[in-house]
Length: 280
Image (tube, rainbow, N blue to C red; front, side):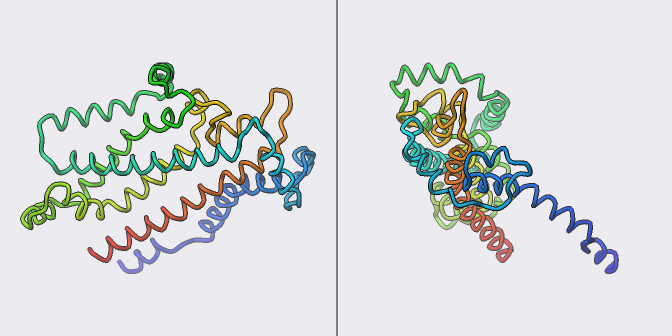
């Protein structure tokens, strides 16, 4: 049995080769973006393509800043605001609702959960026109409310937190907190939320990335006077001419916040898993 278990966990050279190929295939598009961002426009058509960064990044990014149509700085600031607000709201509402659906008993619980799951089956594009009309009626067109308020609650977030809470939190733990005199909110804050930390970090990471990368709805609801990052990048391209060095320089800068958020939430995920392992 010991020998069989050792063979099961032993890594073969083919595994390392496959992992290296997968890593290189994942990293290369980002590296190529960075290389073109540091070179002049003619590098995009070079054969073979360049593999070494150049020295033109400063000039390329300065042209991004000088492009009044793109409004890049405002776009990246707006994306930080919108993505942060939506992420915090989705994590809070998701953990609250997930805890309620998993551990609290109330009338209509299963029906409400079913309704939430059904909303996940409806494509976002189907609600684009009605939502745009609502934003016009509310006077929110070309404001950050239009790209923030409709996404403060996520059906996927509620479903994910409900599934995780069902497995990660025992009924005995909730009952012990009740015996100690904890209110429902205190049970959530002091008992449930720490236990949901790894899943909440995953949800926060996915939500931030999804909100940061949204293009279709912000492009419909905002103008270049008040853009998010993706809308700003769209205005760097023209119908008959695209300066890819300029676009890639802006994209490279716009990727930095995503990397920082990934590092932060990655540490939270690992920390939460390790903390749960120690407690168990």
